[in-house]
Image 1 (tube, rainbow, N blue to C red):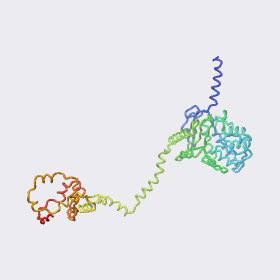
Image 2 (tube, rainbow, N blue to C red; image 1 turned 180 degrees about the vertical axis):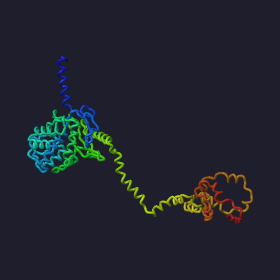
Image 3 (tube, rainbow, N blue to C red; image 1 turned 45 degrees about the vertical axis):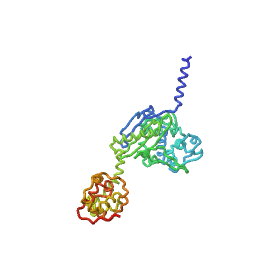
Image 4 (cartoon, rainbow, N blue to C red; image 1 turned 90 degrees about the horizontal axis):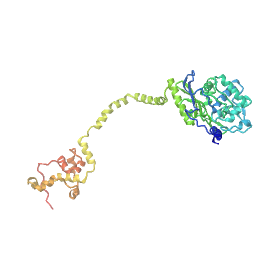
Amino acid sequence: MFIRLAPLVALAAGLFAALSPAQAQIGSERYAAMVVDHRNGTILVSANADETRHPASLTKMMTLYMVFDALRDGRLSLGSAVPISEEAASRPPSKLGIPAGGSVTVEQGILSLVTKSANDVAAAFGELLGGSEERFAQMMTQRARELGMTRTTFRNASGLPDWDQVTTARDMVTLGRRLMLDFPDRYHYFGRTEAAFRGLRLRSHNRMLTSYEGVDGIKTGYIRASGFNIVTSANRDGRRVVGAVFGGSSWVERDQHMTALLDQGFDRLGATPRAAMAQAAAAPLVMRQAQAATSRSPRAAARTATAPTRTATRQAPRPAARSASAARATPARPAARSARAARTAPRPAAARTAPRPAAACAAATSPRPAAQPARRAAAPTPTVRTATRGTAATSRSAARSPVTTRSAIAPRRTTPLAPPRPRR
């Protein structure tokens, strides 16, 4: 029984795998990449460049090539009307959503393809130039062979899923280069980041136009079978490269990988790295500042030359008199003022000649208490300021250590003093 069911189980698994979303990513079986020097086509980076992949909306690059060719031959003008048929209006998004019977101009159609990647407009271009979209796809394939795209086959004008619609990274790089070489006056359309259409704002899907310096085109694409694709062109230091990446799992991964490939390509061409370009952009400002510094007047230069001398003078020690003035400006603590007042007050003659008791000597040499009510009550006298004017000690040091400050501020006098005041 199990042997009979095995083929059915295998068939169901195959159908589920075919219907499930493709998990494309860089390095998977859907991945392919190439970067070339636009000037001579020299290959700078290559990975699976000749393996067939689904182009998705990169197909519109070929559609626009055919439109530009018709403009050059005079079969179309930028103001020509592009009618929207019922078949074209039925195309799934991304689209402008113009109802059947409406129309757009050729230039509006070009802008809608390079920004919004409108499938309905691409189908309308195919019907206008080929009579039918199927016939137009055959014309696209034939022109692709003439351009050297040997492994590309188109089945529609928009890039919507079709298993027979295939291309390679090499062929898409070739198409990108030919768009620049054959239509240099039309290539600027691929650099548009947005466009206006009947009050609508059409934003470009190509974020590389704003995220990588030097990128000026050209197109992105996505379907489940292909993953996220992109063809990019960038210019740096007069060197241009064209690259293609297929099979990204997201537009972020795709753009990051393309950024790395472009950096690698420019590096092989000897172009300036992006980090060095950022530094070079800041160089003009630095040069202007340097020129302004060197073009100062002789008087300013003389001031600059004397600046160190003035600075040294300002940093030199202040005179003692100035320090004393600063001490007077700073409010002295009560303990310091009391100590100075006590030392400058006249002493009795008996006290100078009679020997002091041992207890008094011990009290004089031992540290004094922090708070002494009698001394705190004493008021400062002008004599204190006169005594400290010629010394280098400050009121702060006197407050911290009154015993030490006694000998520093006022040494013991030996000259006769006035008789003591009588006690009350």
